[in-house]
Length: 378
Image 1: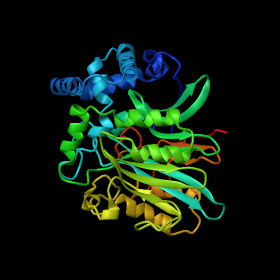
Image 2: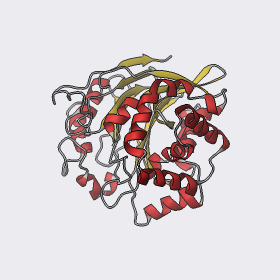
Image 3: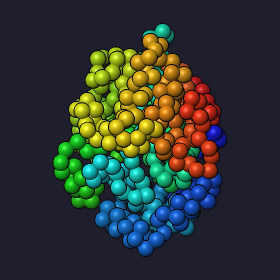
């Protein structure tokens, strides 16, 4: 689907949980079935999904209703749909350099928050890198979450997974948010994740974040909640608002550190902040062993994007798109890109021709991926 339009569907939060994603499933069912058939229907995968669901136990009643509904609509086993909701948490597991929870693999993702000093506008840019890319890109859509007939927020979603990956809540003090895997920063992190997921049974990261998007309209309140609410797993947040922005590096129990736009942050100018999946502020060596960048091991994706950013004084949306699309910055499995501005209501989405999407020839190295559509929400 590279170069195609991103379909958009309303998600009515006033509807019964079992019915909320009916239109989404109706559109994507063939692609959902393809993923399940090719990756998750074998004996080993089926047993693993059943074990994950059983070990996790029951979810919040509302989330459990959504799981039941999609299972019924697709005909897939409920335990399988349940286990898929843990994908982002399990994505943080590394032994020792890359994630190994097949079929998902990583590293993945890049986020930039930048201010164009020429006009004071703050933009957020993101790459979502996720494998198996040739399957998952076919599941990307925009969910417009509504209550009382009014939009609360819009989000980039993956069909079958109920949690936003990129989102914008509009308003005079609204915010945009992206979620990026943050690989573990200490020995014992994998064990702590399993304890939080299966023994303490904390609410899944994505469910916590979706609740914050549903209930929190103001930038500062959202940053506070996203800094302090307990999670299952480590995670990065890039959050932009009206002329402000921050990056939060989360541990399960709280904030590890933050970077604020307008300040001198590690290896960044004061007009931008950048993250991938590693704590480069602590000189995390895993960044140098990331095999997913266009230039491979030894060439961090972050540095390729920063070379583009550092080459100009004016960080326009076009510069940000060029930075995340640079051959050294875009990953082999980048399935989705966005450039967002909360103040202007810009929600600009791209489905790039990633190298792991074999059905479409990737663009030449000097060309940025073609944009799908720009939605201006005011």
